[in-house]
Image (cartoon, rainbow, N blue to C red; front, side, top):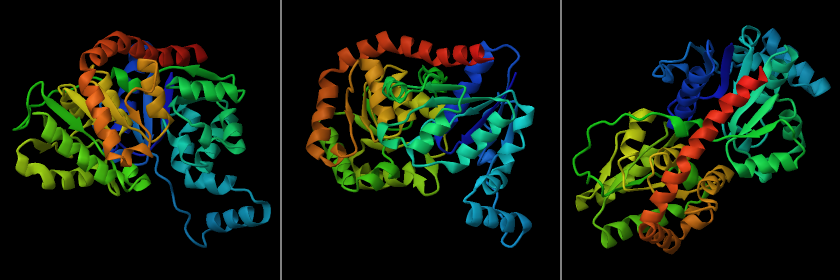
Length: 385
């Protein structure tokens, strides 16, 4: 069975790397003889994922101005409001591989959270037109993200695998009968434990991840997070490990965290992890933390999956849904509007501190079940063919 993953824009987002890496592992583990390929927007960043059978350049093409493709596309769009030809040419680097595959997995877990996606819609139509199986793999979608056009696209899929119950229930309520519940594959990802940096306190280090994406949506959150850092330094004896997880140009956690590091390094209790680690190496550090505070979903999954009590600086349905599936409630998840409130951040941190033992006990009880749900995705995939 030949499987192609697409809708992936490279592994400098270590969460995207975690999805590709863990998905490849569990598919190959459970589906004998499967071959897994990746069409990537930045293929050079994915070479570190050794178990893939092939990596294709899946980047978008530009239509050269005044070329035949450009002129024909212009006529189709202007006269007939038809983007199909243009989008097919723009995404030719993905489309050309469809005939050689049995299953195409759209793996961008939250691609459908960011408005209309006409390019992906066009690729999906072409997958189905060629009689191939189409799967939306480990998705999260909010009620606020839905539209009639998006719903029509979702109906094309042979299988939609929702990675948490909030998305699953919303899609079922929309009348979709091609939806199954699973968990994010990254819960199963291995870790690599590098040497601990100077200043790390074994058993007494709290990780902090913050992102430009959250900062862009709530500019005042930067001050609130600073207040939280001061609170941790004043009220505990813990070391704070600033932990980047996305290192893309224009969306680089390291740049945001470096400013905090420069401000607080004089305390001797704030360290900044490097910006050149891969997903399993970041997971290796996160696994050895006492607590974790994170904005990036897959950084928090790295913590949860190693029984580390975690506070989530959330901004979408995925954060809420994952926490709900673990704890039965949206435990220690703050919405985008709440994270500019320094008092609320400090109160939530204190709550996490006070409930440390209970949180660890719950994680030890539920994470094995969540990992089984990750493998359910492969079981559903196998049933499809």
